[in-house]
Image (cartoon, rainbow, N blue to C red):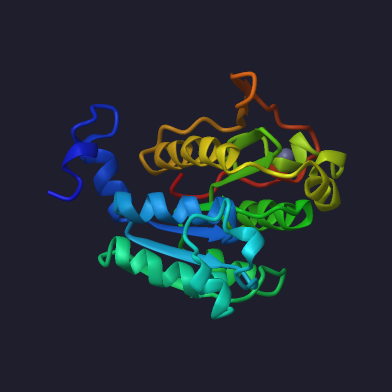
Length: 247
Ligand SMILES: [Zn+2]
């Protein structure tokens, strides 16, 4: 009964519902992107969620980080703790595991192990390179999502099957600089556009219909949505990995 309406969508159907409920999805970061990703996936019936973030909730988070409340600010809760409470209220059937730490080279492999997909919910290019390289090594698909101002980019990375983040950004781009993001700001409406596109790509990964290197670019102010393809750079880390077994 809970998922009746989404199962009725032909392109989603029973197939995606079953794949979703059998999957673990790991989310790196629990800010604006991570809040909405986990809220939607939790409500849609993902089997298990793993969320990592070392930050506590602050007042400046509340305009765009939809899982949190003023009470979380007053109680100085870690974002993952506040998220765990709220997600349990949305759907008690989802197994949520949280880690109140930032992702590092030391803990990432354990964090992503066994995940069907890893979702980028960070705002930091170095962590994104770490996700990229670790997922390539582990053979786990991941989805990059960068948002700033009124626009964003979403890229699907399938290890062994096409381009990776280092093919898109061989060097850290200026617009990915965290200081720059602070200057240009972010609107909750931009996040609310990016996450459904990212989750739709994740669902396609779960049912084997994802396209390696697919890049979606959007802007909400002058409405624009484009689908592009990133090609693998020769000599890039992604082209040195053999196709992982089972994919
Ligand atoms: Zn690459």
